[in-house]
Image (cartoon, rainbow, N blue to C red):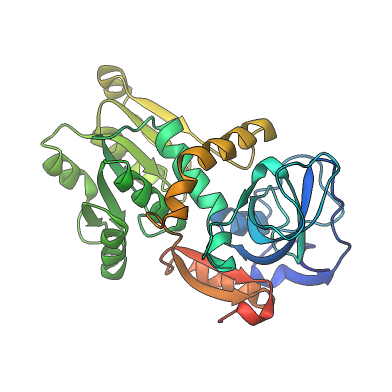
Length: 334
């Protein structure tokens, strides 16, 4: 099968197309013929050698944390799927390939009338957003939520989920085009961080109470303002550290307001916890996708052989929503 293999670390040019064996399917796994996969920031970090896949390294290092396609074969203990089913899967690696094996409980059915490209843009970001918002942040209807990087893949998913959950949503973005997009996703207030700081806006909108939950991808640069922006008993959920992983922390505010700082990472969790999350998502959030109340947001679609261009585009931070790669050549557009 064709696959993008990391044989060395570095820039986008190290992403190499190779012909490698199909993955073996375990007794609880399904073999998926991949139609589309999607990029995540973690892929760029893995390409640089700073984010290896969990567990023992296989013969080939193939990036890709999510994929959509058709079930081609099933393991002997699989009961949830059968060959021919349209599915999307959460992966630890392997999505940048024509075939991938996934545990049946990390695999989800694709809603009717949803394209392969749309489905590939769901597992990693929607599961991350759902978990960060409801499990890590313990957000509830009526809460005020601040979503940084509101036009990103996870940001666009989080805004939609929070809006559907009856929350006041404040989002930060870096351009006018992304402002318009965040509002379209359901954000009540959008702050362009290139024009004004977010803390005074949060204080004004919440009448100095602060927000109950913050979903943050920025890290160091926002840490002090994030702590200031939290309401009593609020939670800062750290999903990424794009600006750095160290910063000044006002422990007086943490103590006085009974604040919680919660780190989260999906890829490195034990598989049992990931399976539990997928099943929770299917019960509580999948219906919103099935009825169109929330939707994956796709910026553009590349063909698999243009993977280096896709990585460069993600690194430019221009995208609104997800960057997808079509593994089936007929479905690509870039």
